[in-house]
Image (tube, rainbow, N blue to C red; front, top):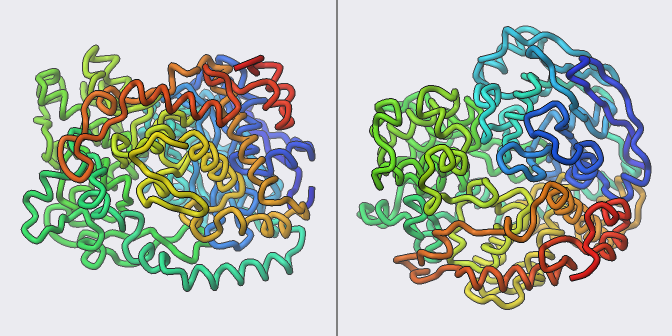
Length: 627
């Protein structure tokens, strides 16, 4: 296939050797790149039952098919591996300069296998790769690591690295990519178990493109559309949290106090003018120095947030994004934007997923409130809702796995419940992954999407929240309070989001490119004249392969669950008061979804479906014979 190199670099950490593999043309035609190719590599290279923190787990780093071509927001690189947090297939994505550098160095993918006995860095320069000792880097936080790498190896490298959380095998640790994070699923712990501190990439060649002239025309065309699009100004001015106030006051589906409330009730109750500090309309004009962009993005939503005076002076962070405003603000009831930014900074520097970390802290706060935890259990920290400094102290210990606090909380909410032997009734996770910033009690479709997401509680696998909370999007309309048609809705959007992750295009432009804008990009890149429907089939194929991976590891309908609080405790107040998703409603939603997917009633893809998707080996391995 044109527009690719056909080459994958395989780095064996056990032997400290690298090798070149040629990827078959059929793999490209079926999966293209990014998430699709990453899912294929996970299925074929990770053996059944592999310990996520063992040598047999592999990490595939795969730039999207369009990553680095100049298309606005086509910057994403996908990491796939078996998650130590959930046991499922993990897809963790970042807008990564390292992915573009990898393509420029001549590689379509990097596969990390085995495990080193001592810390190492992997250095990739064009067609060459080598390992170097990294014992002196082990223990450094991510800012110190970046500085040390520049001092030791020089400028010009794009980097992937882990912090103390990953080194200490925190199951909620991240993979850092030059200030952007592949945040979910515990990828930092997988690299930590392999003793891989960092990857440095330098590429000087061009990104391969089938028709470079046509690609330039496409880039120019869409840049004009994006520049003039009404959403661009809002994204650049206020970032991903632009709709925070609407989610609170109009929708009533912004979870707070560990999901005891559907809006940030305590903060709004204290706000004399109706505005809270977490709202970007308040903090962006006061604290943001400039925009921060992922590679090739012409509508940057990143905000360089700086605190120049006061208690948290010196805090500097990219964000806080909408999810972080919830997880480190609403969930623990911390209303100070400066404190939330400081907590965001701690997570980024130590390498913690802000969503999982904040929701875990909120769970611990409720456990204290219920008398299940005490100061003695938390190293003397008096942890309670709304106490920002106590939250910061807990995050520091979580990121370094220090003391009783770190031992209890460093691996997320489910592990903390298991260790404590209590607290499962108010634990906010699905398949072990903490939920993001959408109170799914007030949206049946988003609840279904969270329940069935192959990587655990997650909003980006289906992107259904945009449709459900807005009421309409693209060709679809939705009533978030109704059960009707949710199976097809979720299935369609999951397949479309899989396409975006496969191509490497940011989902924040899905309301601009939709599906119809993508085929011409693929044609210019590869020469393949895929229709929109054929491209959507690529997403369907990748998504079914991810589900097949989980089925092979023992997952089934019973794992497509919702937290007890979502099913048993209605939203008590606000615009969505009284809403919940009952156990009976969940089962009806699952039936509808599995039928729309072509899966059995137990959630297993049917043999005929897998065969039709050109996955005969997968059909033989896990396919269900009938509904």
